[in-house]
Length: 263
Length: 269
Ligand SMILES: Nc1ncnc2c1ncn2[C@@H]1O[C@H](COP(=O)(O)OP(=O)(O)OP(=O)(O)O)[C@@H](O)[C@H]1O
Ligand SMILES: [Mg+2]
Image (cartoon, rainbow over all chains, first blue to last red; front, side, top):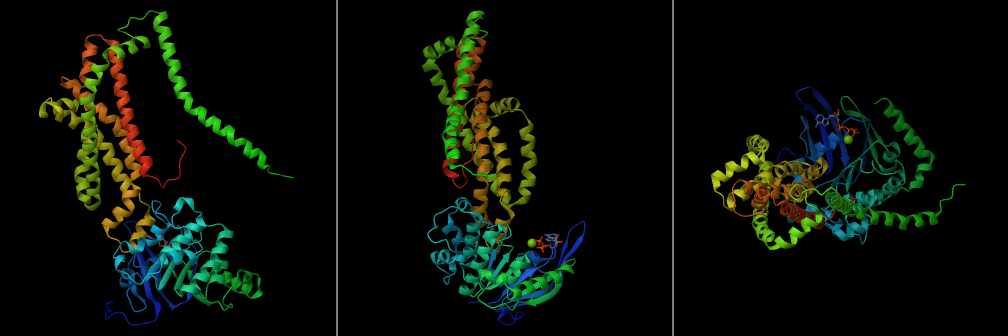
């Protein structure tokens, strides 16, 4: 049973309200994010786009309870970040796959069920089904060093999905991959999103990636990090890679670029 | 037109293999040449046996003193291996303790560093006086020389886990112990094994030096005896025996590493 504290209201979305994050060091005080509010509806795909240092990673770290905001609140479907983290409602995919090299693919995917009280989670996905979903059927016993960068990132996605999270946070997950692999995984990610109906928050530096994947793009400005504009991408769903050659896509991307220029 | 010929690359394969096989023979050839040169020089210039024995003299001493050397090898093996196990175990346990208890590290590390700056030859007599001339003092000296490098490497190794996997464990609400057993314990293994390989040699150095100070048996005792009686060929035999022992323990550690640390892609060594 989940404990619902009085301070967190029941909502069916991820809501970030007036969040400010300041880092204090003995040399300086850095305001990474200032008064940031955003809404991520259930089952939506949102990208965070903005210049380097505008607080995209910091925001994901606040949502996943890795750091506490200096001010403001985060409400994840009626739970606080702490509750959402401990009940495994959050899946996290980093820029590097961060697989444990001493574990094979299957054991890497099962890690969330083996630590931090994950053993008590009964409603989890079948790891073999997940591997099929990410296109790595039959590679259960392979070790990370035997896989390509793209394949490793697929395993990381499967690991993030094993506890059937309500929210999948992805911090430049394909940033280290070559363009061909990246395009391919973008298509795959949309398919995974449609299958799992997870709410996805996706950090990227690529305008094309944000425009292709998202239902909404939150453009952030730097110094301090704040919302510049929220753009709804009304391209038809389901999207194929070829949509990027259309006039409509070009217009969307051009608009995002124009907003980014003033960030 | 740039045409990449698959034939050319295939032809390159066997020659590369042959060259790698050749690499393995080079050190052996070096030793053979050295022995031959030593034999020729000692005979040609008729160097006295007690100053520099010819390789043939050493072989002769080996054959005639074979049982004697063997008798004196066992105590040294016992002391070195026990010291190796003891010193490294304490170092490993201490490094793990530091992960839970930072102030223990700040308390113990300076002492360990000071103890490490004292030369073994200076600390061995102290321990022999303290613990007597039995096995205990030898094991203690061997343990002491193994201890410090392993401690430093273990502390470094446990901290070497990359930041992102630690963050992953935080997202998964893992406890300190879970992070230790699932991440740090593995991340530290390459560091631990490089320390253990150093310790394999130092354990024998420690045991032999302790035997110099006060002992009636062991390779260290035999070294002192042969030096004072100018039995130089036998001294060389003892030297070789000590070297073989160190190499054996080193090989055991290296084999263990190869069997345990299997996730690293094979590196050319
Ligand atoms: N632990 C920390 N201590 C101090 N300052 C920090 C810390 N983490 C982030 N910052 C600062 O906060 C700001 C935002 O950092 P953040 O990593 O969130 O940016 P980002 O948008 O993810 O950038 P990038 O696109 O380069 O990944 C930066 O100015 C950074 O220097
Ligand atoms: Mg970042």
